[in-house]
Length: 309
Image (tube, rainbow, N blue to C red; front, side, top):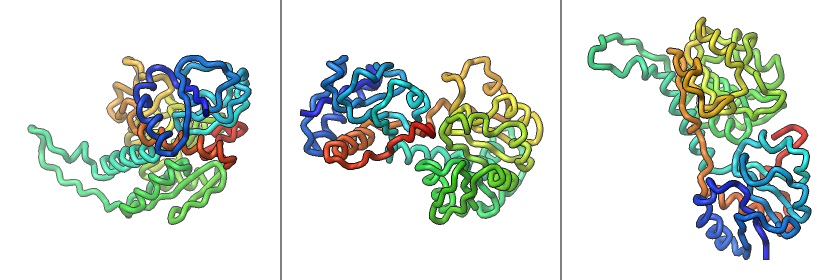
């Protein structure tokens, strides 16, 4: 009998109470799921989420993997007691949600929806937007989510260029890397999407110097991590030539009521809704990794703890 400890917190359990057992049955896996702290030496797999029920992983000597319910792992990857394999969540539904948010807000800014949807007392100013093929997009981060969003925008004829810290190859999407590549990508981008993980190497990636590379009127969409952008530098750029910033993630969440982002006329705030883990599909991802662990196969989406993602 496989023993699973659902240590992702009581707030998450209702979504998995039925979906996780159903996914196990579908895979033909017999397992016992515990939501209360079990004997650590008897646990085969831990299902986890930041803010969950474990801080010290060292007693779980039998555990074959820690299966994270979030795509982001920055709040767990630095835990010195975590010696078990850690797998991040790559959920097809999460990817779908992110693609929809990115495409929706890209089209909103590209088409000038805020300006063109007439209010009762508005005038009649005809400003025709360019075609998508005339609106360059920079996708910063070419992992699972970034690549999916890049492909979706390219399918709408946006000329998308990807950027990542290390070389990446994504079919149909030209990709750059490194500092020189970042400058080249930003200098031509009218819309920038940030979908990088938070690591020491990506924190404040968009600082004052790099924001100054953007063309006048450029728009930033950040559904990735709040720490990717220097808040003060972004506000200063918005007071100048930067066109708009639509932000879904922040250094402190919920975003404080008195934060300048809430008042700035060139900022749109969405409450961390760009993508979320859907229990029904996420449970299947968790179970697939359990199946692989029991079969002696490599885990999917295993985190390189040295790189932080």
